[in-house]
Image (cartoon, rainbow, N blue to C red; front, side, top):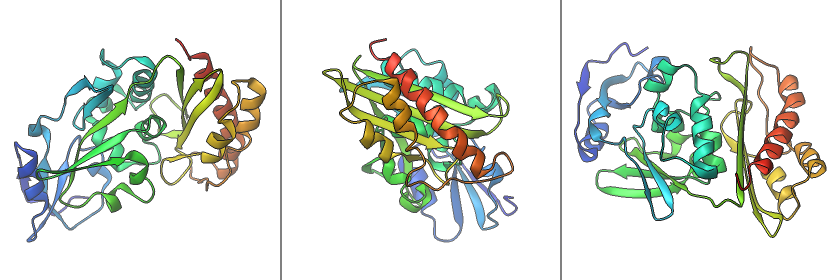
Length: 285
């Protein structure tokens, strides 16, 4: 509960927002869509810094990649006409999987990325696409591969006076296929398992594989054991079935009231295999 919030700020520049977040005399936090703060229990928060005035809702194609502002509601990704090809399709599918229409209009790209709840749907897709995350600290900028945010927790990597301002997603050629699947008890429920896959082929063989998860681990992650196994092999159902058996290698599965660890362990290889087959079928589409 935000029981002690007494200040509300409306900055119009990133520099102003970062300055407010750097305040020493009281604790301010960023407010994007607000869905993350609804479940925060931090009685030390005294000020909210509303990011809506920062004009971070851009989507543009430049230098062979798509740049997406952190304040884009995820509904704007779902309905985007700019997002196309293997990467764009994966982003639109993962955005469409998020909750209900009212929630998609509230949840922002940056918020879903930073909050990184087990049920957040964008992080696996962003991991599969080797997304770059742009962080601003006033005028100072740094760019991180998204995997760095999830080695621990995003809040351990992002400084208190730093903001995620945009993400950069490479555009992939028709030799790449992507797929996304979410397992939940209902369409609008939190995910039990979220899987995102990207396969890039060269001379008929898999030259690059990305398999990313959320929902059944403490934080979004890639399954490097599966990726390594697939590299250099043909797109073949038997290969995919064998790869899926390695899905639990090196990761710690969680258990909660929605599903036990044993259930997740049992069904994970099934969805890995299905996603791999779907991604392979989507090459050149």
